[in-house]
Length: 449
Image 1 (cartoon, rainbow, N blue to C red):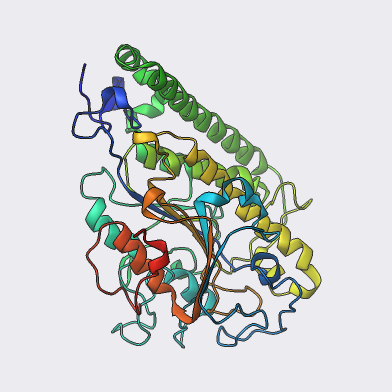
Image 2 (image 1 turned 180 degrees about the horizontal axis):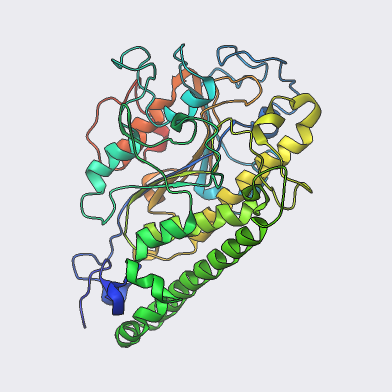
């Protein structure tokens, strides 16, 4: 049997390269039964409506006003530690129903706000850093090297891209600074820039400049692929076909959105044309690209921003509203727009679930799925977008396979730093680390004994 690494590239004319997913038929003896461990973060801006997301808060009323991220919400979770089965899901979490056995809801996680910077900017830019306040010299931000890059130092040394940063901010109006629109940082003041344009991300993953002369990257590699297919078993031939179909689907969807953008550019709107792009399609397209990158070993570490913080330019939430709406502006009128905000929160959860189910359907070694071999976390840097609170952050952690007990609601004691979760994930990813940022320990219930 031909032994070819899972990361082998099929090469066609024009210098094109396409990475393969894991397939048992062409795995080397050293890789049979193994799959790389990955980590991905799905960041949701503006927090959530607490009564729709958190168990037990449906009847609580959020206080009015901007509390600057320092006041506690009336909807505070139980301050005591508890672990319960994740049985009944709240309205915002309802889309997780079919896959809740592979996720954990983690409540009670806090961050400390460092005075002197914007609440929204700090909650995004410092989300994966959580540095001890006032300890980083020469900056107003508690911002240090973020978790994704620390993990990539361990698991990203053999992949073409140590990390990949995805953003679903389609707008070009640069309303806010980089701190509102990025969660990944090489270090203090050193941004790891995200890619917002699906076509640019596609080219970064798969193409050289020569590919622009051709309509379809898969056409460049099919000849080599057909030769390789002869060496595959039945299951891998099916997986191979599904993989190429997914690439073609991505190409078709990119063409469709680009055509729509070109047409919108010729129409006069009050908002920029990008505001009218269907939001869910855009997020799912970027998500498909992220999944392919993880599936093929182009990277083992990704960050994925659903949208920027405090960006008042509206978006077209298709299926929810008849015109583009600003998530941030709605969050500051929660008493009047509670129903609309709940729809947006559920919409974001549906996009996360789309990716969970897609990853869980991708088979890897020893009966595992891509999701089983990935720590995939949904979260936000605000516990509530109306009050700007930094405590009780909405966190869902999926995947991890046998390494992580799942199907649980883990409520941490009041005051538990979010960095405890990041330290736990670093340990699960193989890092020998005693502390991360302002952590006080690990979340032991997430680590299988």
